[in-house]
Structure formats: C-alpha cells, structure tokens
View (cartoon, one colour):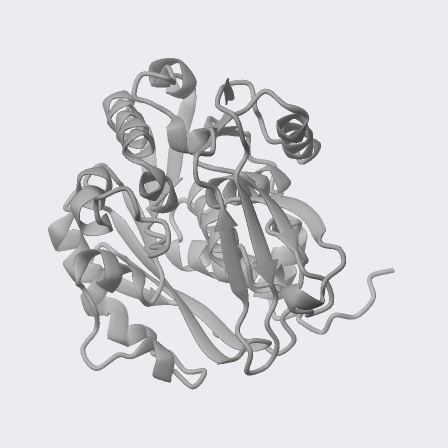
Length: 346
C-alpha cells in the first residue's frame, strides 16, 4: 500500500491534571499533539505506512517530539528543520457544566514561519497515495497557507488523493486574512472533505436551516446535514465524498457521537454512540479522520463500513488521555460489532 502523507504543526501540549484549573496547578502533564500528527499516529497504529511532514527547530524539545512520533512508527524522514521554537498549547480540561479551555502559545513557531519552496513536494509525494491537511495549517500564516497550497497542487498533479479537515479555529486567523478568503483555493483541490457541525458555516456560510450547535441537547440529526454536504459538493466539484461529524454535547463529560457521509448522491448515517464518561475529547475529530482514511483505503467498496470504522475509532479516542488515538483495528472492529461492554480482556 502506498503511504499517506500529512502536513501541519505539532505542538508541545501542557495540560492541567485531574480536572484542575490552571490557577490551581503546581505542575502540568506534557505530551505532544496537532491535527495532522494525530491523524498520522492513528494510521500508523492501524498498520498504514504514514509520514508526517512539518518544520521544527533544531533543539532538544524538537528531538523529543520526533522521538515520540518515531515511537508510534510515524515516518519523519522529510521533516524540515529551521526556526526558533516549537509551538505550545495549554489545556484545562472541563467537567460537567464547565467547558474545557485551550490557551495557545504558538506565535512565531517554526512551521508558522515556513515559506513557499521550503519543501520539495514532488520528492515527498512521489510514492504517496494520499495527502491530508487541515484548516489549522493555513490559519497559521500566509507562508503556511502557501506551502499547503503547493502540496495540494503537486498531489493533484501526481494523482494523489487529497483530504482535508476544515477545522475552523477562530483564534488562529490573525495574519490579516480570513478563512473565507484563503480556504476556497485549497479546498478546491480536495477529493474528501471533512467538517463538524459548525465548520462549513464558519468558513463558507453553509449551514442547515434552523440548526444551532449550542442547542443540540445531545441530539444531532444527520439528515439535517445532507443539504450541507450537497452544497459543499456543488461549490467544490472535485470532491467525491463529504463527511460531517455529529457531536451532541450534553455536558463536558457526556456527549453523543456519530457522523454522516455523502457520496454518489447518497447519504450514509452511522450508529450513534452515547459517551458518558469522557476521559479526553481533544483529538476526537482527528481520530475520526484517521479512522476514515483507514476505512476508505481498506473497505474500498463500502462507504457505510468506512464511516462506521471512523465513528467507532473516534468513540474509543474519548477514553484515551492525550491527543493521540492509541487503539488497534481489532479494538475498533469489536466496538463496530456492538461489544462496548468494557469487560477485561484476558
């Protein structure tokens, strides 16, 4: 199987332990995470050859980060070195009615200072079958947006499947351009588009009528999003599949979770999971994307099964601390078959 290449920023994650608020903390737990790196780790766990491409500084923190990626069998052979710092994000995990909070310290990171021409995309993608990026990368800087567009154009030229997660982050678009100005040129080159209940609205002004994400009360109707999928396909005719993740938030620890996939004029709806004791929801969408790519590559003629794998994989991610989804294919397939008992495996 040809490799999957992902491109974006990986950061040091510093998280308050035990549901504490930042002001209560005397120490923070350190891990690494970032949208495209999270997808890469998921795929590596499923046995898919995968490479993560980014720009990192030449220092000990970056070496620590690279060693973590290698530990999970993620390729780092085309990593570019330069710049002064690795980005950081701080996480305060919410509970019940108190929402989680993220504070970014990533301005001036190595990847944010990347320039077009820094990466030889023809070399990186020459033996790839899939390229994945998210809307976080072009939000970092004009240079990062240009480098991402370079990669997409080369992937299109080489016949490499391109996927994106729209991943709108309002706090990142600060360099003078909006997502609505930058994203269309990149999404035009995508074969597979993923978003959540809000992304299409925030980036492209496309939304289901009468839907308010703050008023889901734990229930999100997949059928409401068929019109969103159709509108995205009309705007971006290259796209063959559009997928929406559906999160119903009852409180910070209790969500419902599912998804829908639109392809060839048909809407596929997944099983809905009731996740009652969330351990860590950060990286949930990335774990869905990792599962989706695996599913589409493995169950090539079964979009329903690919969708169910993605939803089950991301359901399990909510039980795992950290950004990375450290589950195996048999574990996901067992949940797909209905085994959610959590009984000890002996």
